[in-house]
Image (cartoon, rainbow, N blue to C red):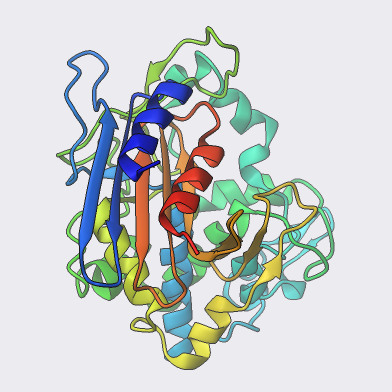
Length: 353
């Protein structure tokens, strides 16, 4: 099956409004494919140059900036959270002195996953999403939710996917630099790399043009669940863990340069690529996680590297070879169905042995 046939099949099988994908291959050639629609009312097709919300692919940018600060000697990955955010992670068995920056980035901090707090889940489920979609959260509010719960395990003893660590990493970046994370992103990565579609929205609740509509069932899984237009929302509950916007071209360029060793010195590149098994943690099968990136072994035995993520109304993946020379980035403008399976099928199809 060709990639284009697979895109058509994914839209048909999962009932997702639309998908776009771009491939950059080792010979310098590129391929673009699309299926479905950008808007279910107008049936306008999706386009290559669209902005879209990238969810947890944001974590790779957060990790990269943190590692750049380490390379500049402005922090050490062994620094404790308490060193930079004194008094913030404390109580209910939580101890910022015992958690390192490396553990925040590697998902081994043991901190409670704030986004699974009952009050946040309730606010994003079903019709409640429409009522709370513009709610603004400060990073401190999200950490406060996390530390109101006991940790899941002692720091460094297990692996569990955790947005809380990346909120804290974003706060540490701001504390060290004295500037907003959005400004650091623009100065360090988006500007120098000419990523013109890549930004952290701040208080922007819309997506910059051009963009597709983003659609959600708001965590409801019944076959007849209503579909809501989730294009507009306040991204602050995701912030440096999942709140960014980007595009196919920008993500392929960023990940190609990152894995190609162009954004970090060798010591920090090694830290980025040092992985921990995710087995038994209820996450993606056949994966290992580094610092803001992961590697997955496809059914045919090929290791692909990158990151992806979901946010209300949008799922994104960017995977490729470890040297950055061959990449696939795709986005779905809906958030229901077996989308992880869809992305795995894309990777298996493109990255054949």
